Image 1 (tube, helix red, strand yellow):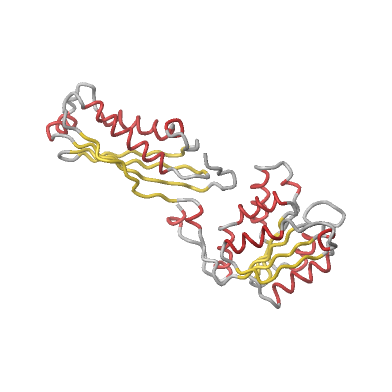
Image 2 (cartoon, rainbow, N blue to C red):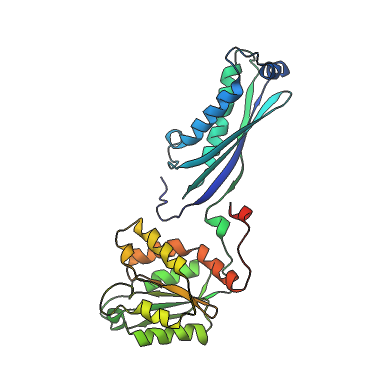
Length: 308
């Protein structure tokens, strides 16, 4: 199975369709309730719902997921019954296979209940009609945005340890489409951290600043204090989510004191100093954090319809 442990949950929705073609006389038997096994449509609806909920037991590489909603509709036409299935889940992976499996099993159920009446029946394909949700729904264009990486560590600045988190952050920023305009390594000095953060915002007009290190309880961990000194507006939701995302993966995430906020048009976020903590934080931040820069320009949020 594909590793989805680094993904975050969003509302996922998918719709699929299948068609059972048959003689017009068979359709008339369905409409009049003259089928020996009973009305196939409510049975097919239950079968589709069960199939959606059990897709991971049928398709080997599908992840088990919590299904929040299943809708099954039938369009009974002259020589066919068209089935549409909608599946919803708030999870880390999509529900298109669930919707398609539901449509397929509904078609097979109808076929099974009518096969003694019509040996010409056929199932005409199972197709995905549409799907929504996931990171692609929240992707923002990062072209033209600049970033700065600030590594705060006495040992790294003094050449005693290798910088292991700064390169991770720089690569991820570039992968997301941002231009890294500054990359600095400095000691854990509160006044110096404040100086660099102010420079990024006030003279360089950097869009996004990510610091790494100095967010714990060590005697020289001053990054949150230095950051709060220069912030004009805090963004507690960002660091609340970073801690919640990390806590689901390590019991130490709650020990982070990182802060985030805005100075001018610059968003500043403190990240942990560990490689695992930085990886989790970057997975949680992108792509959603990029919407900040539209908000700073007064462009608001996308419509609820687009988000769903």
